[in-house]
Amino acid sequence: MSSVLDLARPDILALKAYSHAAWEPSLQRLHANELPWRIAGDPSAAGLNRYPEPQPPPLVEGLAALYGVAPEQVLVGRGSDEAIDLLMRIFCRAGQDKIIVCPPTYSMYAVAARIQGAEVVDVPLLADQGFALDVPAILAKLDANTKLVFVCSPNNPTGNLVPRDTLLDLARQLGTRAILVVDEAYIEFAGVPSMASEIASLPNLVVMRTLSKSHGLAGARCGTLIAQPAIIALARKVIPPYAVSEPTVEVVAPLLRAASISAMQKGVATLLAERARLAEALRKTPGVLRIWPSDANFLLVEFADADDVLRRVRNAGLIIRDVRQPALPRALRLSVGTPEQNDTVLRSLA
Ligand SMILES: Cc1ncc(COP(=O)(O)O)c(C=O)c1O
Image 1 (cartoon, rainbow, N blue to C red):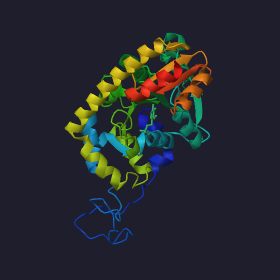
Image 2 (cartoon, protein in one colour; image 1 turned 90 degrees about the vertical axis):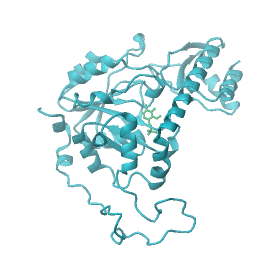
Image 3 (cartoon, rainbow, N blue to C red; image 1 turned 30 degrees about the vertical axis):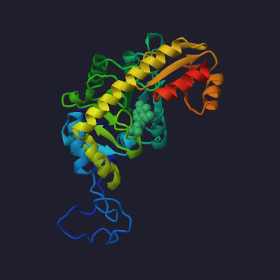
Image 4 (cartoon, rainbow, N blue to C red; image 1 turned 60 degrees about the horizontal axis):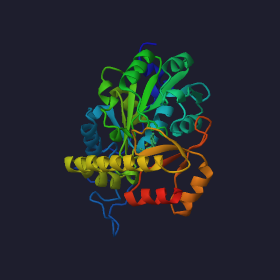
């Protein structure tokens, strides 16, 4: 195999993309079967009677600047969940191809693969080594039909960051045999640089970022796929042309300016202090057996009686995540909340 592009589905490589209504703002639009007037109460600047510009430049350029990459390396979509789905559809032939995931991890990789008809191969994280990535086992499971290897860093739900050198080593060893997808949904909480700067020298590296976590914009649905331009070109063929809505563009683009980013960084610092306080208090709480180190905005906690904990916090008006599975038989995941919410959790467990 000579290029990572050869990993893509041949029919997607050959696909002629949908020809969307041309974007020519200087001309009056009678080419998209839109209503020609704005409706009463439309709060938007552009007019919601109009389709948005595909891959809206204010967002693409703002996100490229935020993530320190070129606009040609960026695809904006409805959260990183859309990026996951696009990767499956670009690379995996139903009934033939495979992805590798490293559980316990974010379950959407496997769900999206199954929706596409791709096989999911598990290479578990090494629980006794702090949920480290098992690079030799990943390489051993690789075969000619393996297209994508998903690594979440920091990982959900275990909270640990995968060391940069490990990711670089894996990307290099995969070479043109498979794409390494690094999901950096929580990276702002880890205070380390993104892997995105490595894409220029590692053509099989793909990075996913999102505004849903540290930026506080989960409701806007805005995620970014960062990859070499040829992969982004394939993703632009596959994503529906008007995927990103005009309200998202108008709300989010101004929030990518420096002032909002520095406010986000202050918010991260506050959250990390609160995470430390919550972990410290949980450590002294009866029934807490273990708190895993976290590089994210949540804590993974092993309880003596997880069912009882779920009941107690629910009775206090809160919901936390049940992440119990074979590798984590008694673990629950708590998002770090406001000081008041965290105090309520602690009181409910006391
Ligand atoms: C690891 C990870 N990746 C991606 C997502 C999805 O993020 P988005 O809101 O950008 O679709 C989540 C959401 O919880 C997540 O935990």
